[in-house]
Image 1 (tube, rainbow, N blue to C red):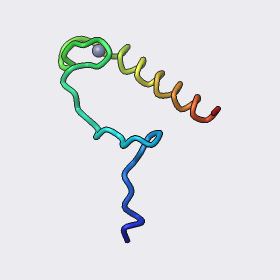
Image 2 (tube, protein in one colour; image 1 turned 60 degrees about the horizontal axis):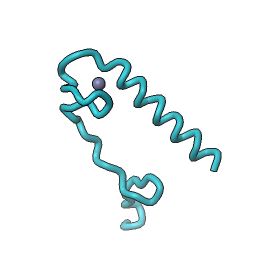
Image 3 (cartoon, protein in one colour; image 1 turned 180 degrees about the vertical axis):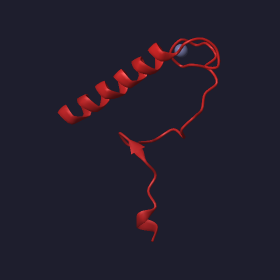
Image 4 (cartoon, protein in one colour; image 1 turned 90 degrees about the vertical axis):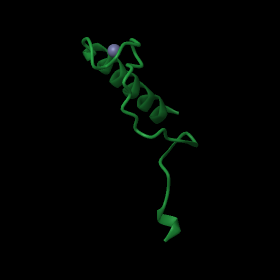
Length: 57
Ligand SMILES: [Zn+2]
């Protein structure tokens, strides 16, 4: 059953493990402080854009 064991890959590179970062990758501040609504929205928009591009090419 090794064929069923596949690591999720994005464009040939193994996907990072889902990391619960303490530091926001958008604004660089601790995610426990401040409002990161915009950051998460920006992240989602980026992901949507990436997916849209992948569909096109
Ligand atoms: Zn943030």
